[in-house]
Each structure stands twice: as C-alpha cells, then as structure tokens.
Length: 226
Image (tube, rainbow, N blue to C red; front, side, top):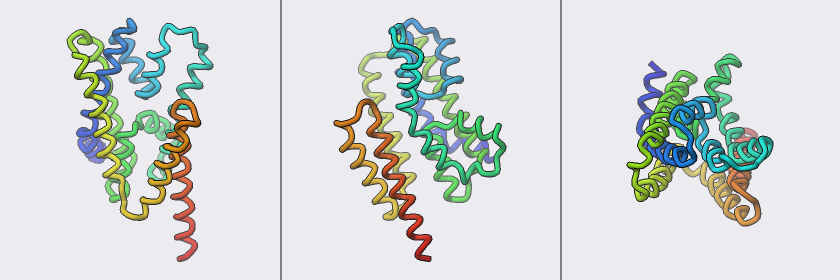
C-alpha cells in the first residue's frame, strides 16, 4: 500500500520529469545516440544532470577522469539528500538502502520527505516514488529520441519553464514555516554570492551546504535550550 501511495503521490511531479526527459531524448538523437542506449543510460545512471553532461561531452576528447569529476561536482548535492534520508532508512538493510538511493531523484525525495514528516512516508513510499519518476524519465527520453524530428524548438524551450515550475511546487511543499526561513535565505544568498566566484554549479552545492549547517546549528540550539 505504501508503495502504491508513493507512486500515485509522486505522479503529478513525474509528469514534469517526463517532459524534461523529452529534451534529453532529442539532444541524444542529435548526437547519434539510439533510444536503446538512452534507456540503458536512464536505468543505470538515473541522473538527469549527469546524463546531460555526458551528452554534452559525447565525442569530445575529455578523459574518463575528467568526465567523472564533472559529474561528481554537479551531483554532490546528493550527499545532503542522502543524509536527510537517514531517519527514514535507518531500519533498512544496506542492500535495500543502495537500491533506494539509486532511485532517489529531487522530485520523489521531496514528496517522500513531506510524507515522512506527516507520518505517512517510509522506505516503501520512497521506492514507489522512485519507480514512478524513473518510469516517467525513461518514457520521456525514449519518446524524445524516437520522435526528435517532430518536436518543435519552441516546445523544447518551454519545457525549461515547466521544470522550474515543478521545483517551485516541491519547495512550497517542503516549507515548514518561519523556522525554515533563515536556512533557506542563507542558502539562497550563499549561492548567489558564490556564483561569480566559483565555476560550474559549485555555488549551488556550497550555498545549500551553508544553509544546511545553519539548520543543524539552530536545531542543536533549540534542543539544548529545552
């Protein structure tokens, strides 16, 4: 039952994931990557940002080490995501944790965290959401690859806006009131200030890390005062 709830509650945001997957599928077709290759990459990597980097560097002379470094840099946020899931996965076996973490995307993580805070979520809920998002991602990328010539450029440009809208909805769902204001503001300001200084997406990671540290310190202070 929890698996089904996770799948169904994640399905609205999974629609946006599938739509964004169309963009990747179209780009892959332009690079000469087949639908089967895209589907295998979806299931084994399951990271939109990493897959976009791989396609961007397809046929380039960049070394494997350079490619791995670039992917690690843009996906370091999952260290924070994984840490936030510790209470939810505390009782799960190591093998189950690895499977669930492979299926964690920004979208199903956000939905599962909201459900967990409300006492409804757990590993099965997270698993259902992960399967839902992966299914949508595979469907979107494969469809975009197979029908790339039929997808107008204007539609591809509009999908960026749709993806931003999905994350806005997720952020609203995660908001817990005034106690989240300081960490969120700190993270946003940190990212903005670091953007001109740091290359790539490091400013996002470090801004988020600073916001997370603020949240941890505030929690410790609150518990110490009790």
